[in-house]
Image (cartoon, rainbow, N blue to C red; front, side):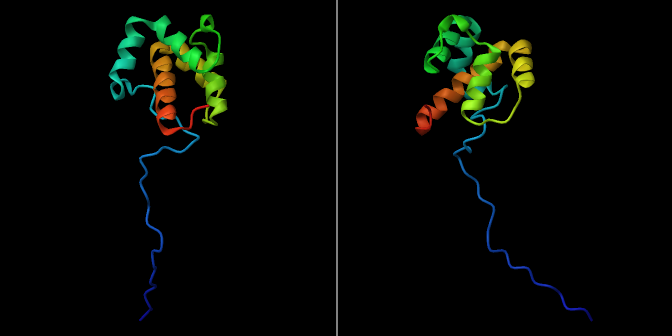
Length: 114
């Protein structure tokens, strides 16, 4: 008879409510995670764009651009590409802008927004 090997588990997988630094704090289509942001994005897109730009110390008239999304993503070391930023901003500009706003809001709550 062969001896059975015994594996001892010393580390259990952990769940953390705090996302890792290099990730979006919410998904592109997580509109219902912050309904107020999505309502603002739907009915006053330019106002939300100015809020996001202001939080990032960018010029408001630049609005929700690919450059602003790319700047934010690189600032927080979020994986992705300029092409992905372009596709998000071109195909669903409201979702892309709302994601930025939710991410800024969450990072401020966690004290990791600069």
